[in-house]
Image (tube, rainbow, N blue to C red; front, side, top):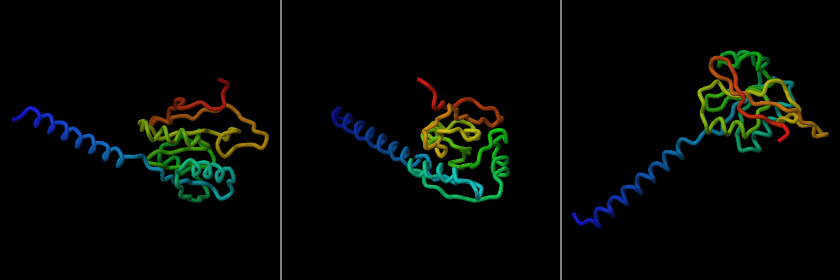
Length: 158
């Protein structure tokens, strides 16, 4: 076989493989469909949902009298409970977690239950104040064992 023809075939074959790998990557893009479980009286939950929608997530809202069964059935420790729980692509998102942290979670896909921002820190998404108060807080990665580690830090001096 002519070396020029062989090079041409190898080049075309490599192009096909690259094209197919790009298609595979596009098909495995993380979901942007977020299910949010909340109680009927929570207004800050609605502000967090608006934050997530502004970041490009589509949301389905389920109103429940209690969220304890949603969290416990999926392994989220009660000590990390907040006022709302999200479920996306197999992960729980507990509390006022910034959208950027959810994007990172979906990109990195760690072996974990999900991420959580316990309590309701001022300045977290949905907990903004008219005066602009911001408390330092951490987004925690919740491991399957129930242990946590810091996933991201927020509102801290640089």
